[in-house]
Length: 175
Image (cartoon, rainbow, N blue to C red; front, side, top):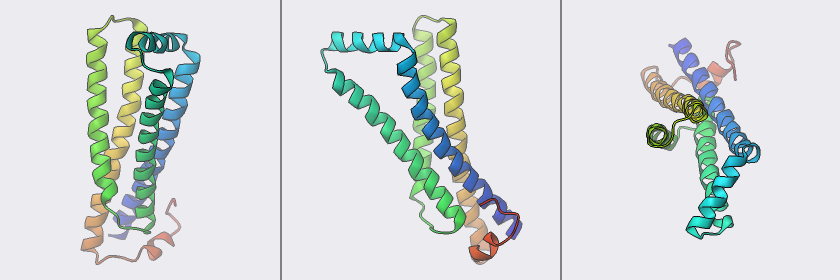
């Protein structure tokens, strides 16, 4: 039973770390996307001109959404890592992870629908595929965190809440 619990906690720790890493890579992706692609800056200027909204409001909205995504990813990832280390038993992050995964999945579907409703070019198809693969990795990490968390709780309940200090003292543990 201890080896199963150790494996689940290692997997939970790794998935939490992966989610944090992917969130930071997403920030870099968005920054590079607007810096390196001049067509995106042109599209932003057209949106601002047509809708008569301020450039600061639009950029603020983009930064706000990105900050919310990073904050959610950090909350879920750090909570998963803390549970894997045995420091906390908070279950709120599981609910947030499920909701976040559903929102990301819906975003992937809408991104595909938008692709087929607009002019299809090779570049747009590559962009949608790469973006959805990136989102699929995040969704996988979120579901892995949820499954490992629930299984860890189940194993802890069956084994009479094994002390995590004894498990972390073993040599085979990654964290």
